[in-house]
Image 1 (cartoon, helix red, strand yellow):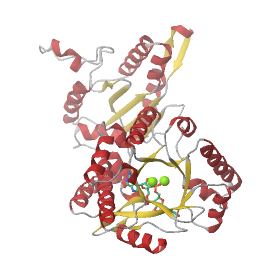
Image 2: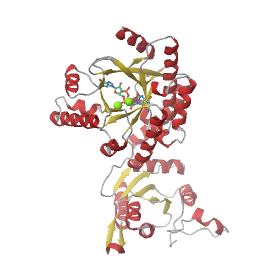
Image 3: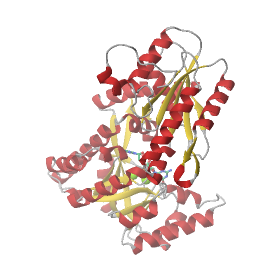
Image 4: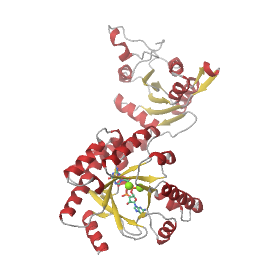
Length: 444
Ligand code: C2E
Ligand code: MG
Ligand code: MG
């Protein structure tokens, strides 16, 4: 590529595409890593690492054809590399992702410079419309301290980029000291979770679900708790998000499933009354090709029926995961498990999903019910609940309202013909042994 980048004069022509991007001529991720490490080792001044996504390239390719997407990428590469000075770098690391190593003297002027580069690079011609397209740059910046390795530097710039929300203009976010604290806490947590799984500190609690008319228990939801030796009983909100991010959630969810199956088996053998138990499964499982096979294997091992269990999936998956979500839902239903859609209404594609998803139960997000009390939007939330229930009924889907805390809420839901409720009004989540006794006592 241009004046700012020269492939070494060693004899590795056949490996060119590993080191140099065929399309733009920019260094690849591999070459970029080598070059950045070399420059940073020289310790010549202050450097920032910039990670940029140009989301619109995908859109341009799909809308006008790949040739236009390629024109856009070449234009971006040309503009960004044209802005570089000695010992600065730009690379195209993947499809629409660029990384830069830039020198800086103060943060304000660095931000201004990145913005100017992005503004210029983001406008490219589209012959087909006889005009230009303005793309959106989404950038994360890490100010290199010295001593970090290139993988950590890149991970921090990426983490800053991921903090950007959806916007129609260029966004530049810096990795902050709070991000560092969170990163260290997450690392500590990761080590801690490994120990928790080994030492069996994770416990399964069950929260009953009630038929709203008969007020009888007709099921229960399994909810994880961490009985931490120093921090006490931790609720999932304290560790599930980090476990979702690093993938540990897959181990945790199957641990919960096993515990539930083990208890159901024991209760069956003791001749106790059984109800269907639902288990939450993270969206991370959607990517696992053997997810449903593992569910089937677990029920077979404990000599249970798939219909003894219900799988709770959340609708709040990213748009490009919707197809996979529907596919997995059909597999779960075909295997004979109950299926519920958790936190309905908290995601963003509810209506189109509702048309196609093969669910038995729709769990109305607690947020709507919270809004029914003095939030100033009471009337709106009540109407939304009314319409969701009517719509689900029309589609012959059972509706369960989560987070019911008062008699007033229960009566309101009953009047709307909601089918099931779950919430502190009746019972909080409780240890599995207590649940078995509770069920016996209530049903006596
Ligand atoms: P969720 O699946 O929507 O579970 C319902 C949450 O609402 C539970 O919080 C439950 O304790 C709480 N809840 C129930 N009734 C009431 C009420 O009347 N008032 C209030 N304020 N809260 C109520 P919890 O146990 O803290 O779990 C939070 C979330 O963590 C769950 O939301 C679920 O998304 C996730 N989670 C819990 N266990 C697991 C698990 O084993 N695997 C996965 N993947 N996620 C889990
Ligand atoms: Mg749930
Ligand atoms: Mg829920």
